[in-house]
Image (tube, rainbow, N blue to C red; front, side):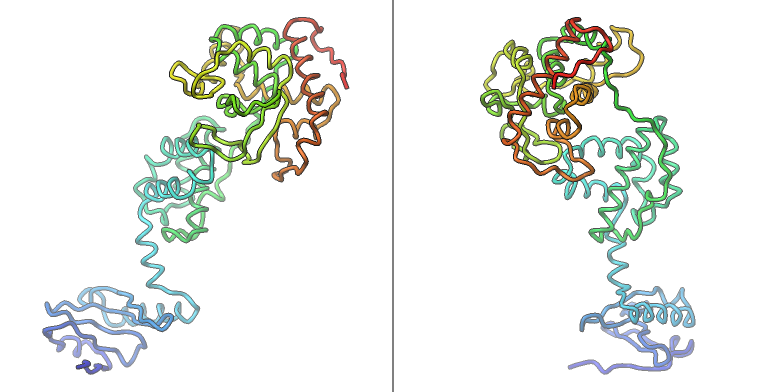
Length: 402
């Protein structure tokens, strides 16, 4: 049998006279719409603001009636009903905020549900968050992290570049939470934190440096040396060169699938687009010195895994040469690109060969239609680099081969 609805104009006296029953029951306030007091069998009483959403009732708990007076309960209930009138769902929003958990939990959820699937460089960003952010913000509720909290974290990072990268990594987590309506996050506390001004890190080897590095490559072992030489001779990304596979080399062309292939360890290209580049004679000559391994990796470690440690190899080379300004494997790529433009082939050729996205938009072209031009550019650039490396061209003198 349906229990009769109890409606009273609540007063302190009425509240004191409410007695517990075998089952919980509600008493509605006739003064404030949506306000009710729920009486438990134990005698405990709780204020509720009850409203309808999508034809279903929502119960918003205001709090313990022994701790919150009637006038305050009415005020909170009035605020809840106002939010409902504005199209909000206070109870659902409260539940979402409570389910969001800490920033550490949100960061882990971001990695598992988004970053690993969408971002090929997720490990670096995850490392920065774990290294610099979680120790200070990890236990805070994600929705409660403020701009001041984020600024306090970033100010403790010594390197301006690393600080900017850390800020970007944390910002990506908050932006994802907002887009997915997770954790009650309503705004991104990283968005207005001022980033450090840094100079471009990109480094290009000079004509006088090039033979020094070319000869020094041979001091770090055959596999690392050949990988570094191939980056310089082709201008391709170090990560893609390190994972180069034999089956992707066809008739002198290196054909890189855009999508990753977990079965053979190919990570895919950085921009996710298939890429085809000619291996000039000089590049094919350095590759000829490598033995084939069963796994198919061109640059295989002792355990037949893709080569690693190219950054460490370059640091060792810089130390041996006494060069204070840091040079990385990536710097060999712009060195190749600048040689393309110095020889008069133009930026379009450079972008096409290095698989760039100009202005964030991928160039659309028939890669086979540019085959002859690409071969000509790659051979000319490789010849120029080898001439410099072997001391056959005077430093600083650029001769157009176009």
